Length: 75
Image (cartoon, rainbow, N blue to C red):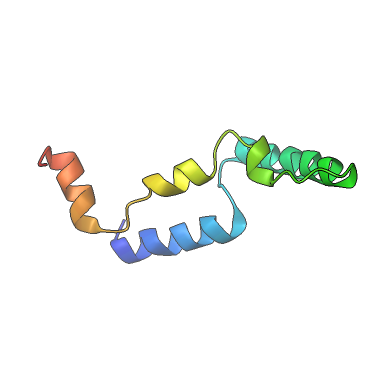
C-alpha cells in the first residue's frame, strides 16, 4: 500500500469511523448511551463510552520515516 492510499484510508476512517464491524456496533451503542446521558442532564462525550478513540488517534503515524524507523529497529 502506498503512502497516498494509506492517507486516503486514514481520512475515510477519521470521517466515517472504524472499519471493523464490531467496533462500528460499539460506536452505535456508545452514541445511544451518550444521548441518554445528555437527556438526563449529563455532559458525557461519546469517547467516554468507547474502549478506543482518542488514544488510538495519537498512535497514527503520518511520517513515512517514523514508520520505517519503527520496523527497522532504528531509534
